[in-house]
Image (cartoon, rainbow, N blue to C red; front, side, top):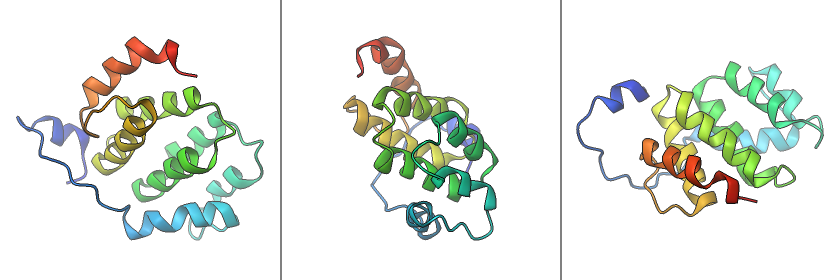
Amino acid sequence: MDSVSAFCLLSSRPQSVFRPAPRQARRWPVAFASGSFPGFRTASSIVSGRTTSIQQMHETYKQAPPHIRIGILEFLWETRTDIPKRERLELLAQVLREDDSLKVVEYAGRWFAQGTGDGLKPLAIPLHLKWWNENKGSVD
């Protein structure tokens, strides 16, 4: 099951081994770059140029199925370096707080840990959020 709430019911968190993004998600950064989104027309607004705001990306993100949400986050983190790191991390923190897909949260946790250097495992959600609340003022 791909549910954060089900995961939270577990008493111990398994050791996580990095896995490449699912095959469907790996296609999306390429699709974002080319503007081609088979079966998901709304996402085309994300690549309409560098003017797409993080708020517009988040609105599109909320409408997308989990495998596309992973691609949107990867596109945001890896490609949209024109958006300040603090704003991108804030969106990842919001995903950690609100998204119910365990896979999406795991990938958000990986990019969050990479961006903050907090040294935490991807699914250490409460610890990531605690770190963010204590340190977001010092992130560029």
